[in-house]
Image (tube, rainbow, N blue to C red):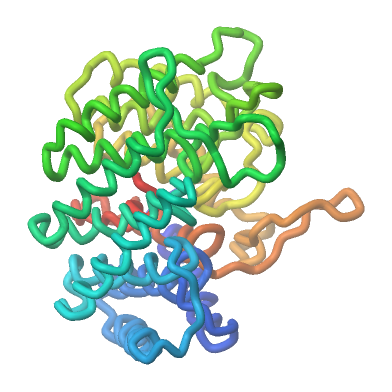
Length: 403
């Protein structure tokens, strides 16, 4: 896959994202709404040096800001589909020099979201998308601007995380109190909703402010997580999606959200940030095994989205190659890149990038999705990150996913 072909794919994705701005229902959130799309528009406009694309994002952001100021838009506070994500996005764009800093706006949200963090403690909700880690992720993005502004809040979020933890076998785990599918005790292991995301968050806090409390908690969480690693050679993965008192099958997918790829990445990332070679080696061992899995049956990959599709796998392997210099992941990176951009017809078509939503009459069904988490915007950002590699442009939009 050469650069020209990737740029043609990006142009196709852009055209459909632009069209969606005038046809989709009003939704300014990160997951599938305009804010997630706008991150792509800003980055794509800067890549092309195209003022028209940046102006398109500017105009819509101004509208989003006014709606937020006037409280005309009903929303919750959660990260992926609420005000925490909106505030994260504004700070990201300030950090990338797309928008000007607004002291009053951010001071207000600093106060609101630390209060939400305390509420999450009462609700026992540590979730990245819908709970404590989402609010903490906002403070991480704030800290990139000026860590002195939010150091106190970051440390308080770490304290709350510890208060929500359960000690076991010398390590730490976090029960999933939001699961309604079972009455059994459940611990989610993945990056979207589980222990891997907590490890990544704590590692980032330590990297930002040197908190020894965050470092110790990250090490203990990683210790517990590694105790869940299967030694069964017949298992296709080392880890299940969750630890349940009854069901613990190690047949998790290849994805950011769940499974060995996200778990292995979080363990390696933790080791890298706290300078622990044992953890780095453990993470790499897990990641290397994921390279052997490619077909639908043993990966669970059906579509091309960031969350659990080909572009998410491609982006994570690309980070291992480009940021951490592990050239041994180049082939598997290229495999998932080709899967992300492959043609089902004679030429690339937007229908190739649809979001899978089920099987009807024995056939896979896909829907159009221009958003960040499962749609065109996230796919486009992963491709932009790849072709921007030569310019060494630091784009940390993937901290939405705690990468």
